[in-house]
Every structure is written in structure tokens, then in C-alpha cells.
Length: 43
Length: 249
Image (tube, rainbow over all chains, first blue to last red; front, side):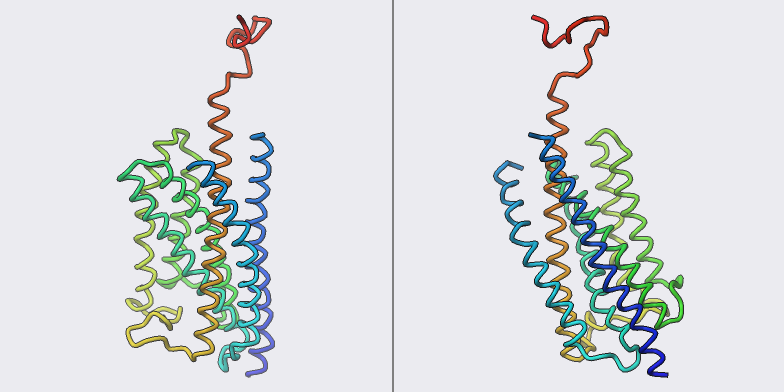
């Protein structure tokens, strides 16, 4: 029972730990891209 | 906001972003190698160290929206409105991650991705309110009117936060009861509590960095908009004129 729970649930933990930095990193990258674009347009 | 403030914001982001990345790496190490494995839930319990800090910072973001909205309605200063709309967008991103990590934790532990219990449903309602807030900002063209409507929605939405906290105490829910903010102190072993605290500091740093970055973007967009409003129209008022009106002497 323990080993079943451990082997199955580690995949969910890996997905969660991959998803959060990816999502927040993508949002930060989007903001930086917009900032660069507005900066160029303002010059 | 003056150009000097803009410069300071830029400096804060440039210094804050690498520090936040370092904190994130330390937090990742603590989550997987410092905190002991939960004997009942196995590795899935480690989602707790990212899910709970995300939830706290999402509430912090919506709390900022509420305070800034009240300040805007009292003072009518554009700076408060700018802070509110930036915090709302960052809050929506964080709250989306809360819901996603909650589902990823729920499936192996509860056997279901989602259940309509009081905690989950009230968090979904909070997310929907602030998605509506972000949409409202884009739909109303008159800046002042959009700011006023959004401020009211921003304040009403934040009333859901205490409801979310107490939902697990008022009703029988599948979601666990609080393990840190409790009348008789935290119910976590010291290593787990330390890991959670590091996660909380990290996620707060992530929130502040994203918020500062978002404010810089909004300021840059506002400057462009103001410059476009101040500039003469690109098409001549009378289409049959050979030269645009503003060049006629």
C-alpha cells in the first residue's frame, strides 16, 4: 500500500513542481517582453 | 509617478529578480531534501510546500487590491488604481496556480481532481471575481469609470478571503483544516514548518518581483498612451487636403 502510494504520487508532485516555475516564469517573460516593446515604441 | 521612481522600480526588479531565483532554488532543495517525507501521503505531500505559499501570496495580492481600491476611492489618485490593477493581475496568476496545484495534490490523496467543498468552491469564486476584475478593466473605455467600478469589485472580492479561511472550520470539508494559523499553535514538525516558512518567503519575493515588473509595464503603457493622446492625429481632418492640417502654416 505504502509503495503503491509513493510510486503513484511522486508523478503528481513532479508535475506540480514543473508547472509552477514554468507558469510564473512564462508570465515574467511576457511582462519583460511587453516592457521591452513599450520601451522601444516610446523612443 | 516620476521618472526617478521608475528608475528605482527598475533597479528593484534587477536586484530582486536574481535574489528571488536564489531563494527559489533554496526552497526547492528544502522541499525535496530537507523536509521529511510524509508517512501517509508519500511524495505528493511535498506539493503542500508550494500550494500553501501560493495561496498565501494570492490572498496577499488580493489584499493589496482591496487596500489600494479603498485608497483610490478616498483619494482618487491614479497611483492607487495602478497598484490595484497590477496586483489583481498578478493575484489571478497566483490563484490559478493555487487551483492547479490543489488539483494535482487532490488526485493522488483524495482520489479526485476536484470536489465542491466549501474551501475549494470559495477559492474558485475568488478566482472568478478577480478574472472578472481583469476583464472589466479591459472592457470599460473611460479610465476613471473603469477605475471606480473595478475598485468596488476589488473590495467586494476581498471579502471572500476570510470566508475561505474559515470555510474549513464552519463546514465539514474534504480540504484539511489549518495546520499553521491555529489557536493552539502550528501542528507541524519543526523541519516541515521551517520548509513551509522558506516557501512563504520565496513566494512573497516572487509576488513582489512580479508586481514591480507589472507596475513598470503599466507605467510604460500609460506613457505611450499619453504621448499618443498629446500628439496630433495621423490622418488629416479633411481628407481632401494635400497636407495634414497640423503642418499648414
